[in-house]
Image 1: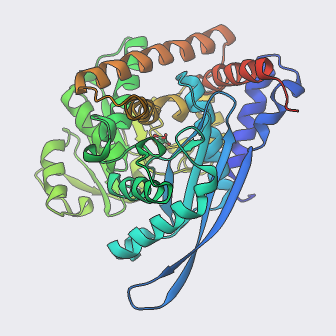
Image 2: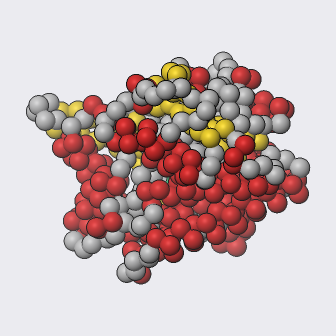
Image 3: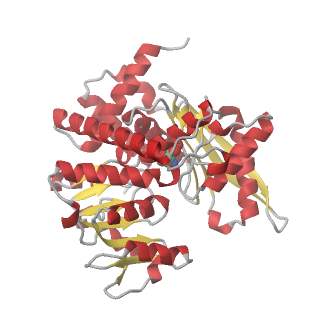
Length: 417
Ligand code: GLU
C-alpha cells in the first residue's frame, strides 16, 4: 500500500466535489496549491546546554476569503504534507461555517512531552520569531491544535507583541483570558461536536437516550465532547487515550473519570465496577452507535473500516478517515459528519476572540455560546442541503459548499496582476 498522504486524500475529495459542482478546472485550480510554504529550523539551547534544531512549518493555503487562520501543532509526526493538508482543511472549514478567513496551519516536529517547560517556551518563542514575517492579525492568525495550550498561545502573543513594540492580541487566538482570550474558547470545539451530534440524530429521528458513544481521545476536544454528551443523556460506553482504553456496557461515569484524570490518573488504569480494559486500537471498532475520533489523521483506514460497528461517525479530529475507509462507510450506510463541519466550533470561537481583540470588546459566555450555536446549526443545515440536493455524502456536500464559496470569492477578486 502506498504511504498515506493526507494532502492527496484532500485532493481526491476536492476533485469529486468540484466535479459535482460542474466546475471548470480553471475555476478551482488554485485551491490545489497552498499559497505559501514557510519551513524554518528552530535552534534551541536545551536546559543541559546542548543545542537541538527542530523542524517547523507555517503553511498558508488560501487568503481569498480573508486573513489566513489556523492552529499550530507540536507532534513528532509533523511533516510538510500533513501541514499542507491541515492548512487546506482550514480554508474549507472557514468557508463551510462562512467566517471571513482563509486557511493556514503550522507545526513543529517534536514530542513536547520530552521538553521541559522552559525548553517548550524557548522553542515557541523562537518559532514565532521565525515565522513573524508572514503572520499578523490581518495576515495570518495562530491558534491551538494538537499539544498546544492557551499558555503556549500566550507566549506567541507576547513574542509577537514584544518584537512589534505594541500589544497585538489579535495575532493569535486561544489565549488565556487574562490577555485577551475569549470565554468559551477552550470548550468550543467539543461544544461544536455536541451541537452537530444533536443535529444529526434529530435529522435521523433518534433520541440521545437510546444511543451509545465511543470516543477516541480524551484531550481538550474529546474530553469536552464526552462531558457535554454525557450531560445530554448519551451513554458513553467507551473512551481511550494514549494510556489505554476502558469500556462499560452500562455507561461510563464521565464526571468521575475526568475528576480522576485531573488528579493525574491515567485513563487506561481507571477502575470501577463494570469497567473493563480495552485495547487502544479497539476503541474504533468497539460496539457503539456513535463513534467520535478525536485524535489525529488516518485512524479509520481500509484495514479497520469493515470492523467499525457505529452507525454514525462524528469527526472531531482533522482527517481521521482515509478515503478508502470513507468509501466503505458510504457503502455500508454509515453516516460520517465530516471534520470541516464537525470540529469547526474551535475556529468559530477563535473568530469571536479575534473580533473581540480587534474591537476592544469582552463578550459574556452566553453571547459566545449562543453565537456559536447559531453558526453551527446553520452550517449543519447548509451542508445537509447540499448533500440532499446532490445525493451525495455529508463530506462531499461540505466540500461543495466550501469550494463554491471559495471559487465565488476568487472569481470576484480576479487575478493579480
Ligand atoms: N486547530 C483548530 C482546528 O483545527 C482550531 C483552529 C483555530 O482556532 O484557528 O480547527
